[in-house]
Image (cartoon, rainbow, N blue to C red):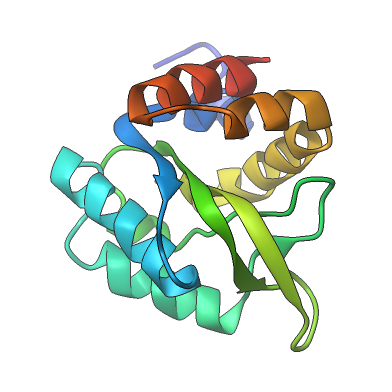
Length: 166
């Protein structure tokens, strides 16, 4: 419907980088990566952002293609295929204690992750741009540490929105 709809250009990246309402977990006490992913997927399902198949799909994708990043503050960016998404955006969790995620692009290395930012994308074409944008934001140590300092879910939601808007 827009004037540029026929030019083949993808949607602008900032729109899918919005935090979904209720999709923030501060101090998640999961024992492992699977626990974090299940907690975030549960929040997304409860809010109506994903289908019932999302949780198993994100677990399967993480097992096959790990998303841990050895950034200044180690993080993971799990995601899965668009057919499991009803409303695009992001979910975020800070962890009570670091948990091991497989390192993105490696064979067997692990990263002790402190922050998980789950991509919930309804368009496969926006995945690479969203990943690049998030990886760039993860380079800002002060901003990431500000997100990690959240006291509760509402505080994390506010801090994550400010960080992602930056």
